[in-house]
Amino acid sequence: MCALSYYLEAAGILTTGISLVRENAESMQPPRSLWVPFALGRPLGKPNDTAFQHRVIDAALSLLAAPAGPVLEDFAEEAPSTPFEDAPACPVSFAEPNSNAQTWTARLNAEHIQLQPWYELGKRRRKGRSLVGASSSTLTEIMDRLGGLLDRDTLPTDDLKGFKLAIEDAKTFYLEALTAQPGDYSAQKIEQILWQQTQLGAGLKRFYDRFSAIPKLAIMARLIASRQAIGGATGDEIEIKSLPSKED
Image (cartoon, rainbow, N blue to C red; front, top):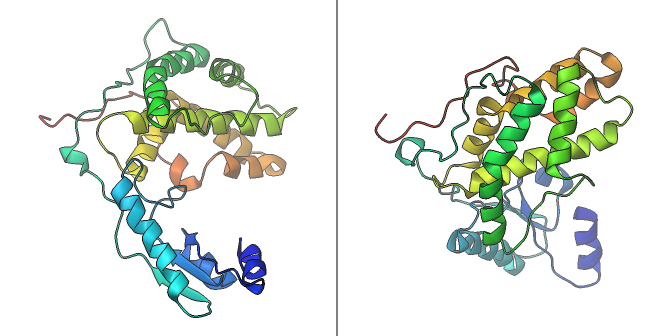
């Protein structure tokens, strides 16, 4: 985008943009950039908050009045969120696996079924938009594939690209479903729920550990998740708890 900005500026077209990583903006020096202190993937801050998003856009557009750059300004507001202790309990309770769901395949499919209504609700709110679809597989096929690999304790070395796209779809499905639930949780809290309270998070840590142990495939571990994100999921038969209610 930086190169494109300078190309457009050379043609007399003013440009502005939003940066989530200040260091990148400082290094690349686009003509005009607004740094925002939001989670990666959320350049406008809070989903479904039109007023707040408009303030972010207005701040970025206001840079067009600045003289020739590079101009880098900071957005002064944090993304609004409800304090965790004030939010209602998460409607989906990720129960501890029972005797009828001892395989990874069964547990992942059960979790998928739990979250499907929330995913559909979020999709309707976004007028049919969803970022799920990077792979050519359905979520049921993805859960079956991931569960099968985990049950056999094997790695998909014959199709690493397809595996990467599949787990991206799975993570996106979970994040979109969790975001649709009441509670108005921050992006960080949603990520924490994914990695620390779901079977998918635990399963991805298994893959992360296996790939990390093979030097030639270690890069795949970093593509699955950052070390910080993966740290909370144990990959063992963990007790999956629901979020605390206001009475707890």
